[in-house]
Image (cartoon, rainbow, N blue to C red; front, side, top):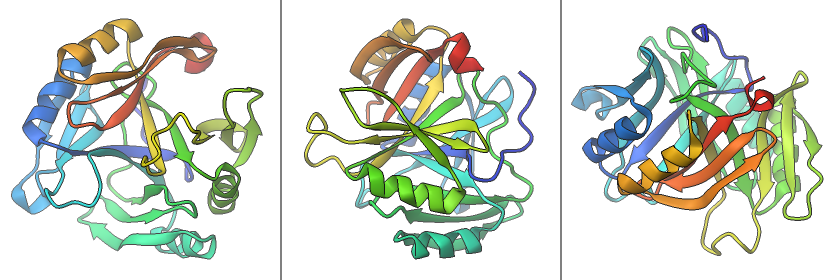
Amino acid sequence: MPAVTKHEAGTVCWVDLMAWDLEKAKTFYGGLFGWTFETGSQETNYYTMARSQGREVAALMPRAKDAPFPPVWNQYFSVESVDRSLARVKELGGRELLPPMDVMESGRMAFCQDSTGVPFGLWQPNQFQGAGLINEPGSMTWHEVKTRDGAKALDFYKGLFGFTADKMQTDQMDYWVMKKDGKEVGGLMKMTTRDPADAPPHTVTTFSVANTDESAATVTRLGGTVLVAPFDSPYGRISIVADPGGASFGIIKLSEMGAA
């Protein structure tokens, strides 16, 4: 696949991990996805770029020992203006967690919560657009919001990014496929009683793999956990897993529909 040089405003352009242990996380994800790493300086909090096929696909950084949240994968939406988008977040009932700041010449960012408590980032690109590879093994391919109030969250993302949404017909869950200009860009799922009662609203990043079953077995071998065993869907064969620090994410061998 050609290198990704631009992400449309309103789509997820980047993901990074607040890792339980940076070196152990590099060993785990390097073993799982074949990533190579470039670790930043202390001044950057050792922000570590992960690469696949020579392109930047994600980042890892150490989680502070006293952080009020567990190890987690964060998602960042590309926006034309962080400041205007953050103002709109507040208008729609969300709140600011980290105020707008310039990241050297790379871009401008902020971190916030939606109206139901789901955390996410905003990224206004300058020299850095985001992931240079998507939908290929070892890179991100799908993004979801999981929340206790699906309808309220849906109104928030429609208002912030101009999404439309189609509700999937299923008896097992309330799930909406969100679209930007007619293109599927992510999912929104209402959490159920099957989710742990203390599980906070959160996002889920799914990465493409060459073989879901083999990758799930590798997760276990490397000290992670398979949370949902591999299963087939119209988009491909999926599993939900967690790294040894507890950060959850999805893996999928994309079908022709999922890769389209």
